Image 1 (cartoon, rainbow, N blue to C red):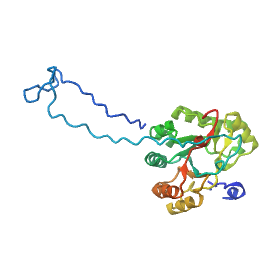
Image 2 (cartoon, rainbow, N blue to C red; image 1 turned 135 degrees about the vertical axis):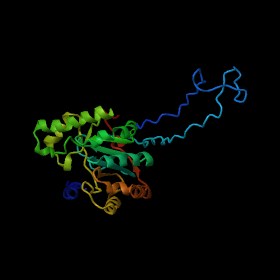
Image 3 (cartoon, rainbow, N blue to C red; image 1 turned 180 degrees about the horizontal axis):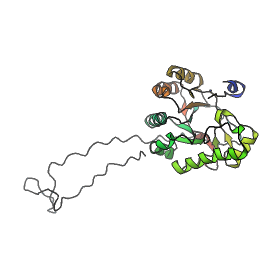
Length: 283
């Protein structure tokens, strides 16, 4: 899948809901198989106490998601973005498509373990999104992972009829809302970066007022060696950049630690688009 690069150059170029361990301490009753004896002892009330009760089994509780960066948000623009506004040390790591359930799951596990904040642009036709819904749900609910609209079937929107553009955006909008309970507006990523005034106007009528492009790519929409992905990260993981990756092929999942090290070494803070921009959908 060809990736446009920024401006002239880029045009050529890039729940698990964890319950607390709740002990249900209950005195044994008739038929429980427990017998009170002088050796097991009794409580002050005379109720028998279990003998040699095993300790509760350990439960792995993942860390709470990190809080969102304390930023003064800028109003979301009505128009195209390919970078974050102003000066700073923020990085918007965004990922698209989702043809691989394995890669989506690995990104979710990486985000949960590392605290990395991600914006995922959903192509709704891929079943991998539904397959990972339970894993992604707590990350989406906390805001650590933001979902954006990447159309239903990854069609070039500029080639479609007006009704076709509406269908592509609306179907994925509805899927995200029904599956994850969030509103993906106002950010949409036109496939291949292809959009024009007509596409933008129709998308805006649906509430998708921000065509979201990028300033650098991991170039992994197709399968490339993991070492190349690291090289592209070194090139593009820079302050205020929106960088695009893809949820399609496994090599990127083998170098998450190296990608995170680049972010740490450069003093960057990962953010979602909703961390940086305010809108009527995400104040």
